[in-house]
Image (cartoon, rainbow, N blue to C red; front, side, top):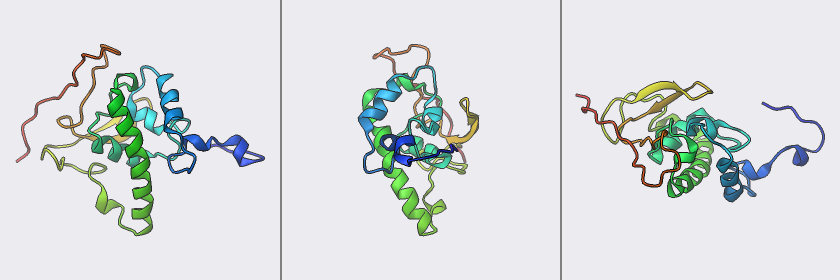
Length: 166
């Protein structure tokens, strides 16, 4: 939370607010390119980059775009980054609509769940990143882009083979 005085338009950057009419995904991408060595789970919660995104939205967006929460932001391919930006905005509007209709939890695919609906494998519940926020993810279908070979275009995402839950 941040307290401000005076004109809100001078203190608040509406271009990073995922639900704002002046949201600027290109500007957000520029901010992201300045970040290195930070997992995407922390970047999504950074209110200077993705204003309005909270922990539930983080979990759901990462699941929907099939991205491992511990992937460092600089290792995400541009096409996947564009998908992440779009889904962060889209899901935020869905989140609000479902919350107003009192059906939000019904639409969760990852947050608080035990089994991946795609793979039928157990979700991992972990306190990820520097923020140590509760994170639910599937190590099978949410790909971890190599954090050791930074900016290597040939680096393949890593999938951890698991046995389906019975």
